[in-house]
Length: 78
Image (tube, rainbow, N blue to C red):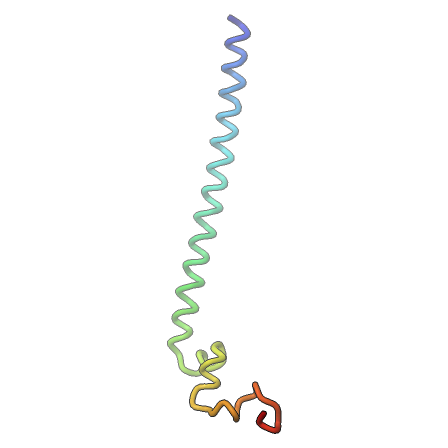
């Protein structure tokens, strides 16, 4: 009987440790997801401003230019 009770106590201790560990992981994941969501919203808000979008997005810099005028080609245009 005592061995059975000792096994239950060990199991209970393991379960307590697992619950504490999973609570910590859950908090970290919630903070991480919240931070990433805030970063996403901030980046989308910044992209609404034309001058900031011009700096952040390479396509905006090339828009309206001929391909032959872009920096992708050498100085001779080939």
